[in-house]
Structures are given as C-alpha cells and as structure tokens.
Image 1 (cartoon, rainbow, N blue to C red):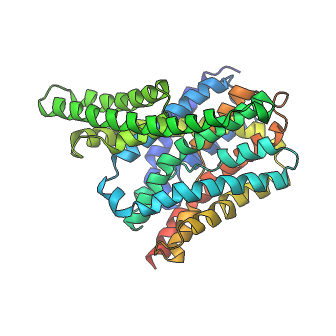
Image 2 (image 1 turned 60 degrees about the horizontal axis):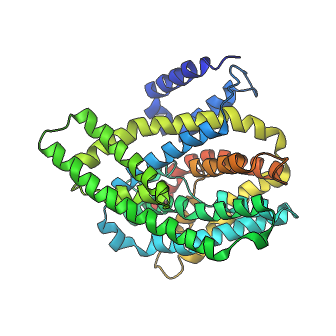
Image 3 (image 1 turned 45 degrees about the horizontal axis):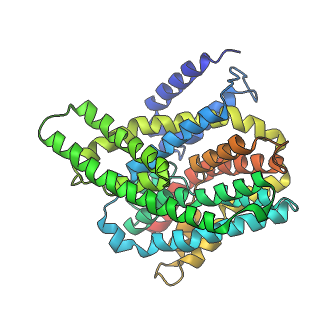
Length: 400
C-alpha cells in the first residue's frame, strides 16, 4: 500500500489530540503513549493502512535531529547557577549510576541470554540512557523539588552522549569478530575526545552564537520568526560541528544550550517557543513511526525472558545503581527512589538500536540479534507507558 496515508493519519492525530489535550493529560495519558498506539493501530497488527518502506538510515536521521533539538532546548531552560548548587547529584548519577546501570544491564542480559556476551553488553548500553523527551513532564511539574527536576534534566541530557562511545566500542568489537584486534589506547583516546571536544564545541558555539543572536535581536536586525529558526540552526551547527571535529554531538548540544550567552531573555524564550511546538512534533512523529514499524516486527519475537528483562531494566537494574550512587547525599529514601524510578527509555535507545541495525545488519550478521531487537523495543514500549502514567502518582507521593 502507498505511503501517502501517513501524512493524513499524523495530521488527523495531531489535530484530534490538540483539541482534547488538556483533558487527556488529566487522565495520566501522554502524547507519546497515544501516538505510539496510533502507529501500532495503523500498522500490520490491526488496520494495516500503511506499510511504509522507511529505511533505518532515514529513521536514524529523524531520531538524531529530534534528540539534538530536545537536549538543546532542555539545557537552555536550566539555570547555570543550579549546576553549582546541585552539581553533586547529577555528577553522581552520571559518574557512578550510569556505569553501574550499564554493567548491571549487561550482566542480567547475559544471565537471561547466555552465550551472547556482545549482545548482552549492547543491551546494557542501549538501555542505560534516559530520555529527555519523556522527562519533560517531570521538568514542568513544579510540585517536585527543584533539585530533583534539575538532576533528571542534566542526567538525561548528558547520559546519551556518555553512553555512545561504549556502544561504538562494542559495535567495533562485533564487526571485527576478535577482541584482540581492538586497541585500548585508541578507544581511551576516542572516549576522551568525544567528551572533551564535544563539551568544548558546545560551550563555544552556545556562548558566542547565543551572544550574536541576542545582539541581533536587541538591535532589531532579526525578525521574530528567524529568531526561532536561528536558535534551532544554532543547535544543528553545534551538533554537526562537534561530530566533524571528533566530539560527541549530543554532549555538545546540551552544553551549548546550557551556555547560551543570552541572559535568559530573547534567545531562550524563542528557543522554548520552538521546542514546545516543533520539537514536540518531531518527538511524536518519532514515536508514531516506532509504533508503526518496529513494534509490529518485535511482537512475534517477544518471549518470557524479553518481558522479564524489560521489567528488570525499568526497576532494579536502574534503581539499585542510582540508590548506591546517591548514598551520602542527604536525600531521603523517597527522593532516591524517585530519581531511580524516573529513568524513562525512549528516543536515545531507539537511535542506538538503529545504529546497531545500520552498522551490523540483522540476524545473519549479528548472532543474537533476534534477542537484542525485541528486548530493546519491549523495554522502550513499556517505559513510555509506565513512566508516563506514574508522574501524577509520584507528584502526590512526594507532596506527602
């Protein structure tokens, strides 16, 4: 069937959700949930209205653009003074919690899927980063303490970039087929460059680019429409610039948003306006295509082990490392559990799965792929629902 109905379905879905969005959100239903379900319903599972031949490379580009824009927008809303005030929490989450989560995820995957250690490590790394798009509902919940919201935003903004070099390393090992061919000095230098060059590129572009946009706006050189577009162009320049210089694009865009030299006025305001509209559109398109293409492919491959891993990934594999990382911070157990629980998996995990597909191919080139694919898809799918529906419950519990 032709791909033409896709645009009509998406437009109708956006219009319908927009008309009743506030009422739906009161029921703890989120837009990513509904657009995922819309994609599943339109696919071969139910209506089979469209069977798009979208290549993984095209979907990967959409995911990269969406994630970069979300990270840039979210970072621009963070006050840098909070980095000094609350820096202990995100540093612990990223420096201790993230590595422990990747190790725990890989260990549990190897126990459930013995004999596939490369796939087990890939699963642990792919499902370790948290999703900035799905974390936006927490960031906007003023009833949740500022230090908790800030920690979630910074963690979800940086852990994508920090996990990526480890995924590229295991992909290189899988491609080579021999661990002895991997140079540890090369990969150590690669990791350093990814973090250092990504951060430096982001700080430089964000600071000077934001300054130029702010000055142009103050002197009435720019139309408001181009103020919004230029803010987005700044995010894309940062991402592509970092990638071309050997840095990590996702770390770069988050740092650029954080260091916008704009006095938190015009540029930040315009960027927020764009992020809340066009950024949300890209997010919903991504989840719609995920439900349309990848969920139907994964459903026949789901096993009991797949479901067990997905449930453990969203609970113990994430919560225990976070609680350990936050020991001695002065947070009470309720706050530690909240930070441990609210680690939604979404666009970053989808993007990393697409990278594996693009670079290693499918089952015939990656032994154990039939385990990797449904595990990642099932975990992301469950996360979209359980984390989205849990926000009101956590708000009420934390209030008490």
